Length: 129
Image (cartoon, rainbow, N blue to C red; front, side, top):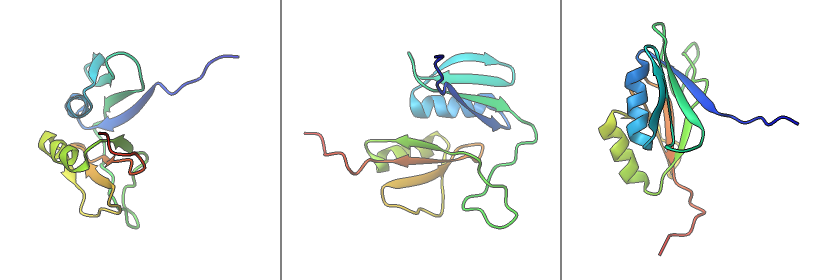
C-alpha cells in the first residue's frame, strides 16, 4: 500500500515573497525552495510546509463574512504557549487583529495579504513548572 500524507498548504497572495517572509518570521520556518512567483517554506528539518503563489487577481476574504462577501476557503490554526505575547509579536510582524474575537483562548488575526489565521492556546494543558 502506498503512503499518502499532506505535505504542503498553498496560499495565494498579491506578493508570494512578502507573505512567505511574514510566515517565515512568525513560525521560524526556513525557505526550502523559491521561484519568481512562488515560495516554499517549512520547519528546518521535516514537517508540513507552506507555499505561497503570487496571484495578481487575489481578493482577500472577509471575516466574518456577510452575504456576497469573498469568503475564506481555509485558515491556519497556530498553537502558541503565550497568547498575549504571540499576538503582540504577530502584530509587530505585520498581522492585523480582527475586530471580532469569538473565544478567550483564540485570537483571530489577518496576515499581510488578508488571510485570517488563528493563534490559540490549549487550555487542557497543565502549566509547566
